[in-house]
Length: 497
Image (tube, rainbow, N blue to C red; front, side):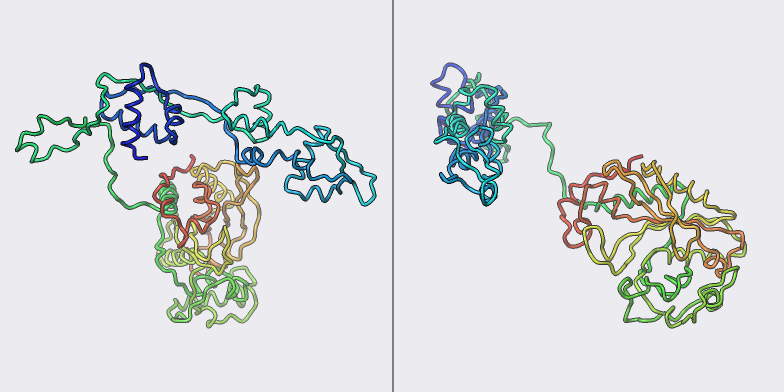
């Protein structure tokens, strides 16, 4: 029924009524949904003093979906009782019935049935009484008939405990005639037109009052993806700590900068096609700082700088292979090499946040493309204690205060540490990053002074974002399956600090 027609019927009822009408009762009398009557009340309220409406709260009982089924078909215990023949039934067979498990327990409590564990063929169930009264169904039918007040509180609570009955709070309106009550509804004008002004007809018209508290329509605008919001927060933390951002606009790297410069051997499993995306065109890089390349070759194949190396035949063809970078540490290696070419060494603090690529099996927490957050500090005499101190400061700014460090192995750092934090939600320690001190075999061939140490650490961008925004599947955060409405509705990110 149209809202205007419901409004007319409501006014006609009020005209013949001295007291107040309740919206729920009106809906029942007219055979309408209560929300239709509420809509008509609000529409009439917008017309001025036509009606007075007072909102009240009422509670009533409703059957759940399971309660409605039992009101039709009977309770579980009654259905179980009816399914038992005179000669009894094997317990396992009864339990396979739709109402078997619940019905068996309730029927036993009511002493309608008994269980003979010593019967031949296994435990068997028999009737104890000839017939039963399904009081549960009878009580639910009373509620359906609007006679819930015939039940006492104990009976209602028992049905509620069985999830057959629920108490529902509903907002109703008590409606009375207003000071300008009339049964003729004249819709007020909303716009003052040039024609009304020129003809003077505006004088005889009633206009809808302006609502100065109403909000205007929000203009369409761009929206920041949750990853970008969290990335901005991480970047701000690095800048506050005095770090300089590294240029990371080269997704394609040679194996030399991605692996060899980091003292990662050419037979390392990470260089396998199952872990790394190699390029077909161009397949190889050709330009290298040759003197540096020779030093890297020597430390790999023969050793040096106090190290015995890996003692294998180092191949320049392997180092020339182009790939999609597997970590931003390749960028750190380039930056440290440039630092080593300066006439006088100066301490530096670098960071980067950008995409890396690995040939991963896709699942809810892994993608073949993701972001790596990396921090690097180079100075004289840097120790493991310095690394732990910087990590504590960094993670404290993220709001992570409970940290643990665990020894680990990385080809290009020694010592190496995994960083763990206590997750209050999961109530366990979880890994939040990896770190270490770059090996001399990596730094000295670059030309850095012997007393210079470099500490570094890295973590993912996607996993903290998923935690902050309550996203369980990484494919709902990145890729073609992203829900754009989630992007529009996501609030500004604030890291806990």
